[in-house]
Length: 359
Image (cartoon, rainbow, N blue to C red; front, side, top):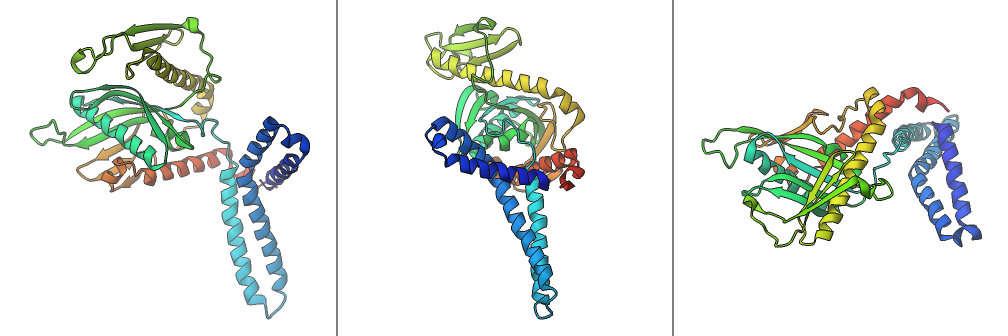
């Protein structure tokens, strides 16, 4: 690991020198590229520089132990420096983990009600609000792309975008089947019911990521309808796009403008096609490694919300918190942070400890 860190430090210093050269800062594109590369290296290089300082403190402390008057102080400084080295070593391991290429992307989130009828749709609406509140807490923006609601305000299906730094890296663990256990508002005899909803978290794709041949699309337009099927627009503003090769179908009727509905539908289509490409690319890798935090498969049961007991349990890491009201109001980091940690530890185990000891 230390050999690799020395190479990265050298690369970082070369980038810093290059950014000071006239031919670099006179070329905005080149300067921006060097600046981006240096910014990506800065955290791990900074940690390595701290590690080198702690290592130097260890050597100094060992030398001072020969002096009887300074031995006790030197032993304290030695212990502190060794503890810093151990802490920084763990930090550097995490910083050296391969980065998820989608980590900085925005999110397209899909929620669909599952088993449980109207109660499942109401649970879907609760999940949608939970994620929107979570986005608000992190300063991210949300935009509804498509929603199919019930008369009681439940969600049959909702698709919305979450835009902001780190959105996908934190929300990607939410894909899967969510289960709720509570007495439904629709239940007159007070009997507890179990219902489900499915969440899919897709990295939003740009046009450059997914090339879509217009000849592969069938685009239908129709009048948007509301609850009970009544028409809410007098024009054919709703859009249905079918990607013929994959069979993926996307609809959008949220906007009064047909053009805006088409733009939103294309965003969702790109995200679904990008996810399909990623799944195909990762299939061989996924068969060899089943992460502790789950596969991200939307058919996998990942979490239970038990309102009677006031608890939320994440089944992938076996963690339960007894603060369900705060959690469904978007205060989710007490489970998301441990999920991130568990995933990092799984990656470290997959890489093998021997690799970190070399150098």
